[in-house]
Image 1 (cartoon, chains in turn green, cyan):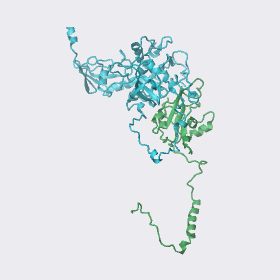
Image 2 (cartoon, rainbow over the protein chains, first blue to last red):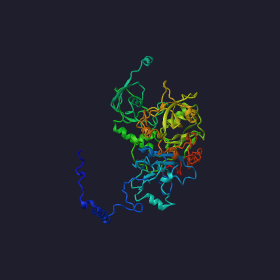
Image 3 (cartoon, chains in turn green, cyan):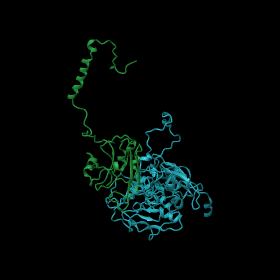
Image 4 (cartoon, helix red, strand yellow):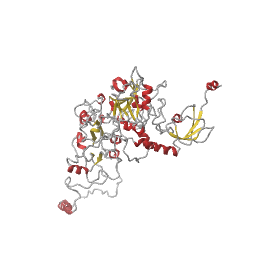
Length: 188
Length: 403
């Protein structure tokens, strides 16, 4: 059979001599190679205490954005769901009732908003389609889970923390990137 | 003499639109002649509705350039003409999409139509089947140059079924013609003039006539919407199906808009111009309010076939038309055992809950509807409900100048 690369070495079947059959020198040689790596620069980091910087265009877990007063931006217009090539996004729209004005920015809102993270391919088309600055791909991963049902993300998993009640968590969720880059959005 | 001339069948007129020549009977408008050729050359129309007598001539989106008036008088017409109101002449040469002037004028018309339009498409129930959306997408400019406060009105419920969003209205008068020509007594019309023009009923009369629901279908924008469909779902997530039933008032031939087995709304069947289809006798298939608002059970209807939707329409997005289901290899692989790890999405998902029947709710859903009170329904509220006239406080999204 022809080798795929020229690095293939045929297995040697020759009888070992005394030095080789002692094994010890070869074991020591292997341990030395291992020992040598202790002094090398580490390629790993202590995740999750330490994290690597994300690329400015990293597309992670979605967040549902709130405005500066903490009201939900999403109006359940369905553009993210129709743009989604994996059909991961579903929602139910509801009408804002009197007394809910501090919760939702517009008269219609998403009572239920779900992203199936098993389906999501993190392409970012939902973010692009959103006319209300409501959905963004953040700088976090979807954490691993033992069960499939843990990957159906509802509103409580996706909503960004309240900017007034929990400003620290809000800032953390917003990440290092600007959520409203200059010139983005056609709101005004 | 004159009688003799009348008896002779009039010869057809030859008309050239965008370099395509067609023969049409005299008395045809340029717009209808263009529609006979096809959708590529047909000018868009916001107010003209071929099934409504006297409609047209108001919105100016169908402006075309007439490069030669007729064979007898081949001079070009000095100004662009409204093609829905101009009859063809023999030897007329019309330029629509081939005319720079027309496209430029149309861009201006779209800008004018959008001056007071709130652009609240994300919450508007008409989005996806809105003619103004299509028009501004095809002919409009991306940015608005208008810097002033938009005209705004309080939303109004005219009658039990129809909701009026005057802010979105472009004053095409189609709904007025529907009331005049389809119903026996009209209770709504245009009040005031100019910028203050307001469609309303006179002193809070309710629109209850049997055929009044058709004004929802003829409205080219989201000004008149179905109260029973308010915020239920976006049209492109619903499955349109042609269906019929025996109705003593109307033809009973409709389009159902379903999610699963739930009928979310019923509309007339639309043709390629967005107008109501004609039946085999050439009569428009208007439907009565009973069929439209009260028959929200799939069992009320005989379903004929899925409605064919233009594949360029957003309504056709994510609708699959596979005749043969792809083969599922799982059965063979598992020797008939059921897989242990598959998840039933309905057990986990809170969307499309099995105990919530949005089709049975008269009004819009609220947060409670999806959180354990499946019968809870919204009150069709805006922030300001009382009073008629300009929404000066402007606290809802239909007035983007304020928050």
